[in-house]
Structures are given as structure tokens and as C-alpha cells.
Image (tube, rainbow, N blue to C red; front, side, top):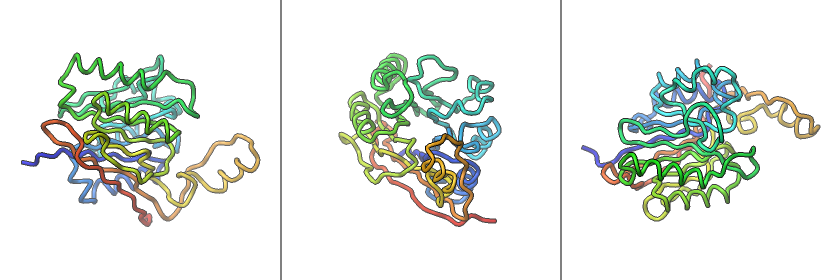
Length: 268
């Protein structure tokens, strides 16, 4: 029996191109199929903004165990009709008052927590204080020290992510992976010999646009400074940005983190 427990984390899934390549990846990739637990950030999964119930249910059918999110999770109104009933979806814990939950404890001993950064982001409660609150709550209700605890830190600023991860490691968190920028970083490491870290996992979706969005639409918005809704890019190539983290089953300590980054031609 293996002494390792592997978690696959998929960076922000963007629109239909992201959903399609994620489905293909989960069905056919050997590394993906070898993982024990799958987490995906799904806040941009439906038309690039928010998450519909239909797409939520598809992800669970494909074998994704937990869906994390961020500031765009509220962009589809029907999320309010199902977020309280979902067994997989979590929203950032540090929203002051919101439906849904900010963390979940799964039957296999995995804890997944979602937090939102504050630098260059909408006003929100402090993620550092919020994380300490969650950890203290978990320590009083479960065997937190020996469990696998994973945080999706949805944030913009690199410095905030690095500082948050170091603080999380000091509290006993076993993995912190950043999302939101849609650009994968190459700074994967194990902090203090126990907590896996990656500043940003990147995104899953069309690789030819601008972080998954249409180039011409993005250019027009930047040239004119006039607010306009972004459109999801539809190109002939899509990418998978993800990471696989290996944990010690007995202690929950992170032993290895491996980035996944590849582009595939879209099947017509």
C-alpha cells in the first residue's frame, strides 16, 4: 500500500475551452488518474465568469472532489440557489457575510480552505486573521495536525501570497497554492520541510488569448479605458496549468510538489 496521498490541483478553469480540456485531461492523463483527490478552482468556469449549476454538476461527474473559487463566484445568479446544498463547492472564507462555506473536511481526511487576498482586490476581511480563526476551530474539532490541509489563496499580489504561505505553514497548514492571476509561476517549494507552496497555479483554457480571454476585446478595453465585458477566447489550442502535491499519509506533511504545464491542440 502506498504511503503517499496525491492531490491534483487545477488552476482557474476558464469557460468552455477550459472545461473541455480539463475533462480530456482527467479522462486520459496517467498522472491525473494516479491522484487520490482532485481540487479545481471553478470561479471562471461558466462563460468566463462564475459557475452555473450545470457546470458544477459536470465537474463532480468527471471526478473533481472539491471546487474552490474567488471573487467571481457570485457572477452567476443561480449560484445562490445551490451553493448551500453543494457538497463540493467552497467560497472564500473571509467574506464577512455570505452564503456557502469557506472550508470543508472530506471523509478521507483532507481539509480544503479558500481565502481571498486584499491587495488590489475588493474590500474583504483579513485573510491572515481569518486563517488563524479557521485553524483554531479545526484544532478543537478534529485531528488537524495529522490531516492534509490545503489552502487555495485567491489573490493578486505575489508578496501577499508568499507572506500568507509562510504564515499558513507556521499554523500547521500543509499546502498553499495561489490562484487568480491565471499565470503559472515556477517557484514551487516545500516551506519549512512540511508545507507545499506555489504562488500561482495558472489557468486551464484557451492558450492563444489574454489569460483565457479574447485578445481583440482585451486590447480594445485597454486602449479605450472604457469598461467592457471580456469574452472567452476560442482558439485552436488550450492549456492545462496544474500541480500535483504528494503528502505523507500518516503525518499529512507535504513531501513533493510538481507543476503541470502543457498546451494541446483542440479536437474539432
